[in-house]
Image (tube, rainbow, N blue to C red; front, side, top):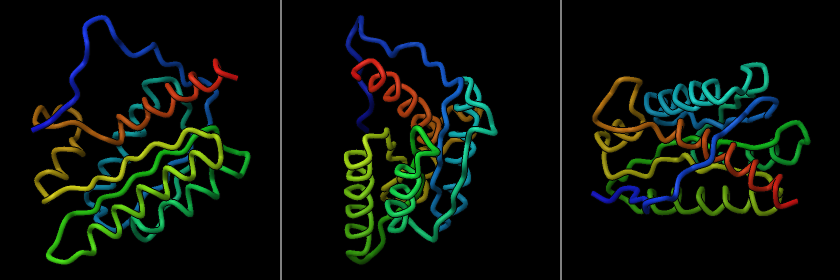
Length: 165
């Protein structure tokens, strides 16, 4: 199984989310998984100093609808960054490729068009076990939580964009 391989001497910066206004778009489809991703994102944002009052949650029907909601939030002027959460599990039809691919493309486009950090936390897994491992709950040593990862991503990218501009 592939994972993150870090080079010696390269580490992530210290993240400070104080004052950051974050929107989270969550797909209801596969909500048993997406709720866990949301918990991970929320806990991680708190750990980095983002106030609960500065976090907006928006639920949408499924992963295909995530980019449109993300676009509305990213361009509203009320949010500094957007976290996109969903779960698409491969089935027996080509539906997986269309939904997952278009969702990923749309989320990327929102970030490019808005100039705001937009994190892709939409799981695209082969089965439920993989989805559970990527939406691990606190204390679970058999996985990690992509929602928590996305919180760190948007805060780091906010710092990158602030230092670049």
